[in-house]
Length: 187
Image 1: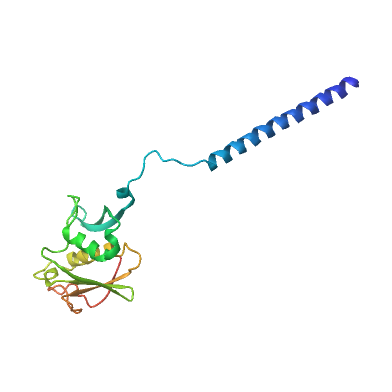
Image 2: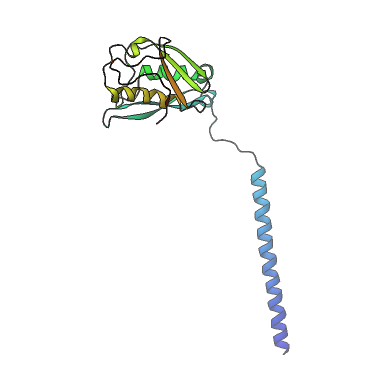
């Protein structure tokens, strides 16, 4: 009976020592984690001012392989977007893609006259070269407009786009396939 009591006390002492040991390990682990959290993060490589100003925009061009509008990501200086972001995006579409596998859709010699926002509608006024002598058919004309609409609606404040030709609203492509008498939305 004495041996059982001694064994019981030894067992209790061992359990208490194990619990104290586990508590000590947990306490030290928590303490070390707090010290790591408080310490200052030092990046491996400094970020230059040039890198801080870079942002990615998405432009849409034609993929001739599948005849679909395809996004092209471009990295530009974010400061370029501050003054007139929509004018910048449209002028980049006019210039054409950097990717050799994509084709620009906006006709040559097209000039951007103006870009205005009114009641959350972006009004894009192109020169007559945008429609002049274009007999592309309704499908091709819709792809041109889809390229523009998808590009400018990447920026969140615009949902609708209206097209003007030299300030006139009721124009359209010469074959009558697509007219500009309505607003266009992203598809």
